[in-house]
Length: 71
Image (cartoon, rainbow, N blue to C red):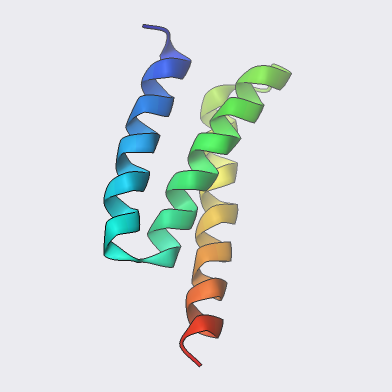
């Protein structure tokens, strides 16, 4: 297994687990990390850096979604 497929497998599994709990922040972070890793690896920027950036953006988006959804 390549590093990318290992990262994606873990992120998909975590996303499914978090989605069952309904926490937008954690779900956003997991999905953001997976997509960031894929984009980073595809562009040559690096899967690790892309995952970190994606996790931050996804967590922020998920938190905003949770805040607006509960009102």
